[in-house]
Each structure stands twice: as C-alpha cells, then as structure tokens.
Length: 333
Image 1 (tube, rainbow, N blue to C red):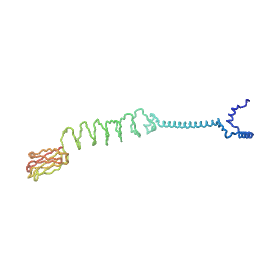
Image 2 (image 1 turned 180 degrees about the vertical axis):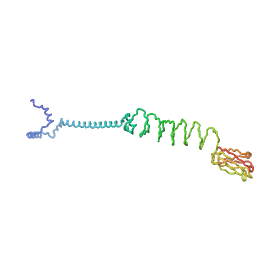
Image 3 (image 1 turned 45 degrees about the vertical axis):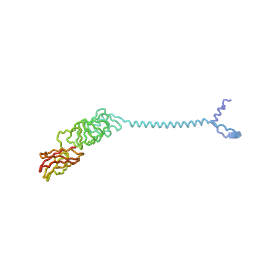
C-alpha cells in the first residue's frame, strides 16, 4: 500500500460524512452506476438492508438543541433570583427607620423658630431629660414604656384602663359607670345623687342626713337617738252611733300614727265613735295601740275593732253627753 493512500476503513467514514457532488464530466459514470444498481437491485423476496446509522453531524445538531434548552432554563432561573433579591432589599430598606441625633444646633433652631426635625420615618432620641415650657401636641399615638407622672390636671375625652389604675384624687363631673367590682379604700364624696341598681353592702357605719327608701329591712336592733316622726297621708273617717245627736269626730296624722278628737252630743249610745280608713291597705291585720287623752277618755270602757283596711274606736257603755276627749293611736304590722 502506498503512503498517500487512505485505508479502507477511514475512507468509509469520510464517505459517510461527506458525499461529493457529481461534476459534468462524471455524468456518464453516474449513469453507469445507476444502471448497475438497477440491474443488481434485490428482488422483492430478498430482505431489506439495515438503515444507515446517524452520522456525526446529526448527533451534533441534537446536542446543540439540548444545550440551548438548558441555557434558557438557566437564564429564566437567574432572572427570578435577581428579581427576588432586589424585592427583598427594597422591603428591608423601607422597613428600616433611620435615627438622628438631636444636636445643639438643632436645639437652638427649635428654640428660635417652628422647625421640623427629620421625617415620619425617623426616630428622635433625647438621651437627657427634657422640659417643655409650652403645650405639647401628639398627633399620633403616645406610647409610654415607663411610668407616667402628671403633676397638674388631666383632661381626657375618653379613658380605657385594661390593668390596674391608682388615683390619689379623681373627680368625675358626669356619669361614672363601673361594670365590675369597685373597691374604695379612702373616703368618697358624692356631690350629687347616688343610684345603686343592685345590692349594697357596708362594713362600717353609714351617715346620711336623710335616707329615703321604699322598703327597709333590719336584721338587728333599731336604735333611735332622736325623735321618731311619722309621715304620710291623712286617712279618711266615718262617724259612729256613739257620738250621739250633734256629736263630731276628727282625725289628724297618718296610717301609722295620729290623734282622734271626739265631741259627744245628746242621746249617745254604746257603740263606736269613729272608723278610720287607711290610705293604703296593710298586707295583714295590723296591731293598734290606743292611748286615751284626758280623764273623760280614761273613764270610758273603750275598745278597738280592726282589719287590714281600717280600725274603729268604740265604747262598751253609753258615753257622757257633751264631753270632749281624744285618743292617740299607733299602727304597726
């Protein structure tokens, strides 16, 4: 084999990659090849030859397609990561509040004019104590981390205390509503009326110039250090047969206590002088205490008829003619 000749195996690979185009001078050779091929073509009964293997160029084209798809995925992923990074930096920057130190120049500027220090995104820190000679207006919320001490008057339109509140002195000009329990350790002065819808319990003495109640229940002794004054409407009356002809009777007082004045006439007989009708009926028949006034009343054989709505003062014997006397009464149930 000559040095310039190509081995048969390498020659086959070269022919597989490149197919030389026929020239005009080779047309005759091409036709001869065609005739030879047609003459030597396999018959229908002969098996088909295997398909040719893909060449290097076709494999390279498929590899380039996969590479382009992978590069596109990398570019999209990189864009998403970049956008997320800038968005996180932007959110962190907007939530960060800058701080600014209050210098002497700024303090002098505040003292001489109406100046604005910083913006609403910044924090003003005052390390030392601060005294404001004029008014202080807080347009937003006021948060106090430590104790709040106020030496003067505090005027609030509305106050809500979720925890414990201690007041040395509190003055309420309008209504005071307490939904829960209230414990008052010291004295309490109420300039206006006090209305209690529920029960009231007092561990000590209760002092009041006047107490008005619709019902009073005493579980202990009743001690009165002053007079007992009985009030109420004056009950009505009706005369009895014991007054006689021309006799009169009158009553003054109330359902609880009062005085009956009697003047007898002529021809008086045994019976009742007067019947007193209560302005308000008792729940049951009350007890009647009668005290005669004067010697004429003391000599009578008087007695009482009573019911839940009235009572009568009577005499068991005919009373004297033209006598004047009286009776005091006290009623309790």
